[in-house]
Length: 137
Image 1: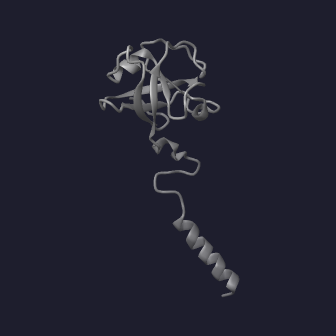
Image 2 (image 1 turned 90 degrees about the vertical axis):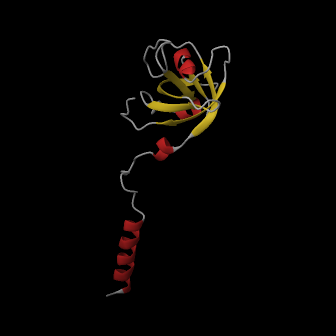
Image 3 (image 1 turned 180 degrees about the horizontal axis):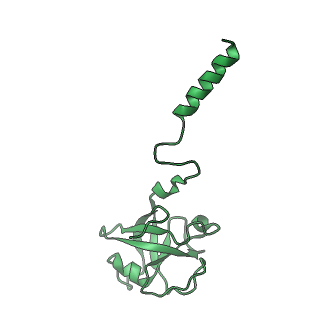
C-alpha cells in the first residue's frame, strides 16, 4: 500500500470514532441538554413574539432576546425549577423578553404560581432547560 492509502485508512477510522453520539443525529442541537439559571418573573400575557395569543391561565414563557434569536424555540416546552423550594413546572415558549438577561425568564402568572411563588414575591431564582421538540407534558 502507498503512504496515501495508509492516511486514507487512518482518516476513515478516526471519523468513525468522532461521529455523533448514539441517538444524536447530525444537526441536532445539544442546547436542549443545557441547564440555565436566572431570575424568574411574571407578566400579563397576550399576543406573543411567536405570533400566538395567550391568556394568563396558560403556562407561557418569554425567553431572553439572546436565546430567542429568530424564534427557533417557539412552541417548545421547557422544564422550570424554583430553586428556593424545588417545585417544577412546564412552560411553553411563546414570547421574547428583551429586558431579560440570558438565563432569565418571564412567565405567565399561572406558571409563576405553579412554581410555588406568590405574585407578591415578583421574582424567584429558577433553573430551566428546554425539552426536546415535540415534547408534551
